[in-house]
Amino acid sequence: MHKKSVTAFLVLSALIAAAALAYFVMLETGSVRVTRELDNGSVYSGYWRWGEPYGKGFLATPNGRLYDGKWDDNGVLTHGVMITRHYTYSGALKDYLPDGFGECRYKNGNVYYGDFSKGVKNGIGRLDYANDKMEFGRWDNGKLVYPKGQKYRPGQHIYGMDVSNHQKDIEWEDLVLYADANGKVTGNLKSSPYLQPVLFVLIKSTEGVDFRAHTFERNFAEARRCGVVRGAYHFLRLSDIDGQIKNFIKNTPLLPGDLPPVLDMELDNRVMARETAKAVEYAHKWLDAMEKHYGVRPMLYTYDSYYNSYLKGKGFEKYDFFIARYNPETMPRVPHLEIWQYSEKGNVGGINAPTDLDIFMGDYAEFTKYVAEKGIQP
Image (cartoon, rainbow, N blue to C red; front, side):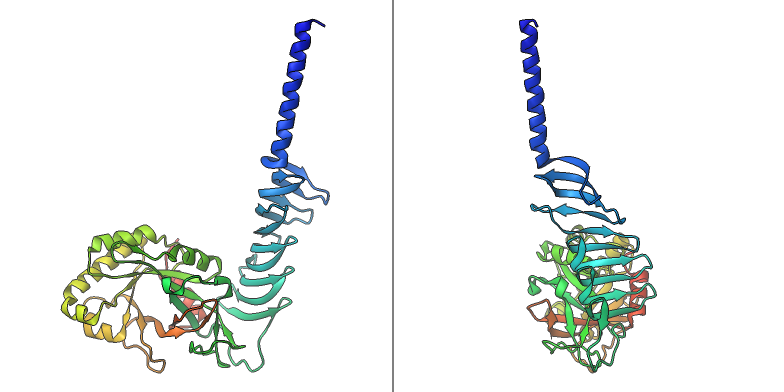
């Protein structure tokens, strides 16, 4: 062979070997996507590292299950989506089975939010039926077990809460309300075998022209992930109202299924007595702007005494009200009352701070209807 040909051949061979080595290194270090059949007959498509799935990928098993998730450094899928013939699950996984907290959407329209162990409901969880009924409590090996002496079924009373930066880091997967044997939640109990779910939450988003609650983004996302109907509120100040409108809209991405936006109107009484006309004008401008932007009529939060002293007869009659009155024996005295904040010092499992407790004026079917009709639309 000619000397130049031999040299070219050796160079080409070296380049091919280098390319093969580079590809092997990229493949085994998780830099190249692959599709391959595993020893158990499953087909994996995604990144590969040192003989194991790694990073974002998909897995199809011989029994028809599909997995979408991110495999960790040890080739283990700890969280992801599992699709079967009967349901779609999203949440914590162990050995490719639901294990930990997750959401399970069944083909018949039912939805479960809560704890699993080895693929079955086990622990605290809520099952929402497609016919607007629900169950909540402790599950044991797939069966709901109510404690001895319980005289209520969850869904007769609809409890919620409102939160802000004051609640700090909320453990959303652990949320639970402690009730008496009749299902009543006073907020005073720190533990109880009788449990009620947190079914909705109003989260502080903004205040004035430039304040944004630093906990809002996490709380807003976590509420949706954990199956809690969420809403957001703005605390009104007597400053640039156009700036306040922009502040809320910019920082509050309400989505279909969320509660309507809420205006928190609780200026100091001395200020309100002096500036009633200005406060009323600003409130109407904010409410009108929210209805135009989000396509639904907002809700107004205040105290019942505040409403009767300053807002009654000022053009707010068409709005639904979210009223604070911390007398659990006396209903607030306002029209269109939808939510009653009845305690400001409630104990909530998963929160290490006093929390405002709320109750919706209706049962579970009426609540789901309210959200569907007056909440953010598709």
